[in-house]
Length: 139
Image (cartoon, rainbow, N blue to C red; front, side):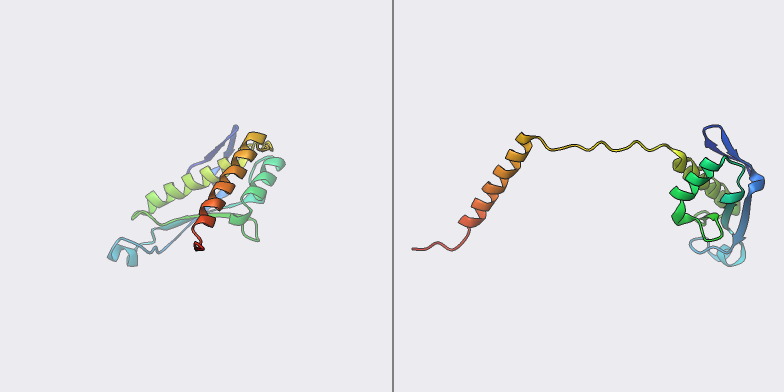
């Protein structure tokens, strides 16, 4: 396995990752029944050699992917070879952690202008008038 470069000069060493293999579903014919091609990469977030603030950010942003034991797990089974699935799972984990560390810009609240409000009201009046005219005509 290789080290994960998560940007900002931070590297997760391969020793901090665990890889497990299992039988995969999907394409592959008889190969699927014989060979363990699914690869699961696991990383214990609490024991990663990263600064505390970075670990906390990973824990918060990837909370849905981290189990109760604090293990981040990524699985790949789309390829027919174990090696390709391992590379794909490592790349996915690298991408997830990198995205979790990106600083989000805060949204600036905006208001619609007076002209936009008036235009919206006029449009509503036009549509309402059109629908009113569709009703039954009294003779």
